[in-house]
Length: 342
Image 1 (tube, rainbow, N blue to C red):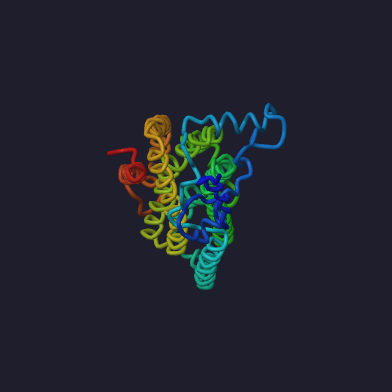
Image 2 (tube, rainbow, N blue to C red):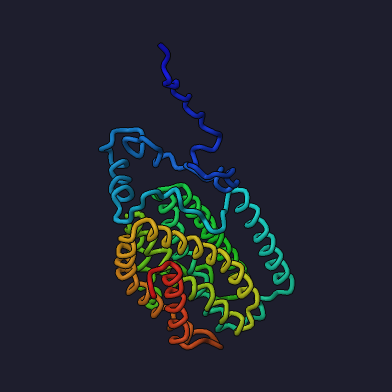
């Protein structure tokens, strides 16, 4: 007696790129070198790290990442709009540093800083050279975000943003030394005192010190990339660049313009991530909006404090209202792009 039953078909062998899911195409270089790089999010894990799940480190990941109010069905579906990889990042920033080096050498050769107005140099000593302190705080928080992010596609964005902020700290420090060598001002000696005691800086300092305690990865991301950084970058990069140009400081204007590209890149992936989170789970909109509401007053207080310096210090300054309004519009634009405002 014969049977019509057919033997079971052999299980289909996995293809080279099966770990990336059913793409129906060969993955891009960006996807190949970015997918599932974060060991603490490996499939089938009992805990983030290979130790007792109740150890402090594992409980930290469990509390502030895995049980974050910001949840998604699959965080690995997020993609950086710029698709930055280590290779493209290093190449891109090497080119930018070549540009910066050329600008610094060109203006140093003609003794540019010796022709700056004394009042403008004093303004730089209050508004520009102390920025290595707040930018270092942002750098630390961005590095933390890279550690805690729930997918390597997010971690990589944060790691490259950390590199951007380190680049800014280094450039501000270099420019500080240039200005100190060319003038008899307090530049290079008083920045810490300005950061810790100047009244106009204290709301910014308070906001960033509180940011350092935003341990939940989602709140850290929202507070920093959607609220505080758009506000501060508008003031300390774009508005300061405009005022530098108005006060015949072309070198500072050009350097800040170069750094603005890093801020724009951070904005692109941050708004894309917020949009992705909302697309994954509609409840994430409310979660993000609650964090935005919590951190917006701190951003507004920081903007109000710093804006006064633009009116009081430069020989040719800007009205505090103008600077504060520009910061508000910049933050509102980011939130609108993220899908969090109408």
